[in-house]
Image (cartoon, rainbow, N blue to C red; front, side, top):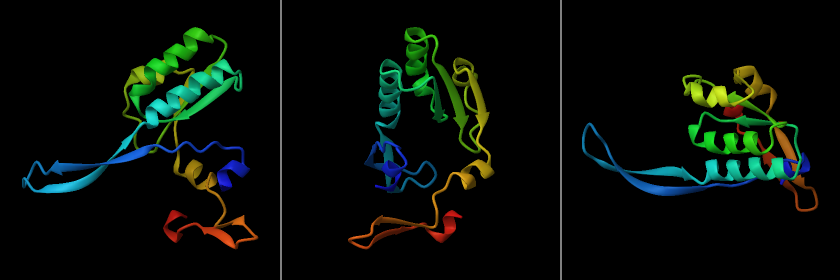
Length: 138
């Protein structure tokens, strides 16, 4: 996988199909709900602190469910710093999440543009496996 070439560990969560009821019209519709992502982040954050693989961890989230994990790392490993990058448009998160971290800032559209992979990535040249970024991701 292309991210692994950049030494990024890919941890996939799960999407659970849900049936929801519209509050306005009462119609039932299918939706998906992300599961396990906050737990995966929490485990990797604590494990990374235990294994001493970081001095400063950066978390991109607006999920207050990570507060206990951040508190546990800071209590168990007081020299570790944890920074928070809040996704675009989510700065209205609770102060508790921002305050528990050593520093925080809101992601800017430029940050997102600058962090994208190239338009084309050759995954496996022997098999001709090539990934193309969708045009609307630019």
